[in-house]
Length: 141
Image 1: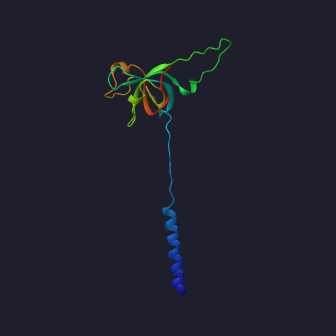
Image 2: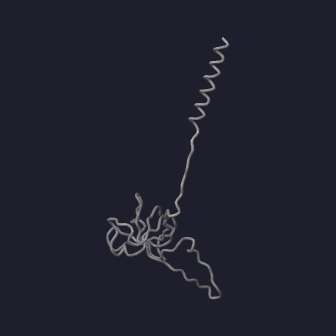
Image 3: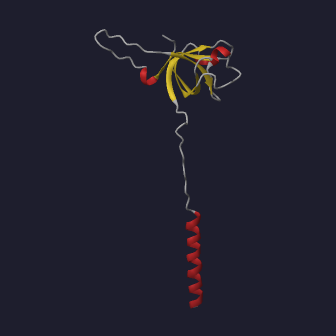
């Protein structure tokens, strides 16, 4: 009987040790500094030069879209840019044509991406890979 208790204790100890070893997980995550970061721009969606191509006109980063008074004249200058929009899967741009929107995505250097909707005219301007879109006004003003 003493042997059985001793064997049981050894088996139980091994089982606990094996179980503890199986449930230990080590996760390692690496982040590369050259990975593109998503940004949000505000602007007006317009049709591009070709069918099914779209541009963001008067595009400005959302962080700079706020109007502030400068000096005593009360005027500000905001530099805007036009971007060729390259929609990610399941992003529909056609319903947003003529609307003021906020688009979140990744900036692509001009000419970096080729799609069936990208034209030579659209390819000359900076491109914006749209990951999400939100209408902020029914009209562009």
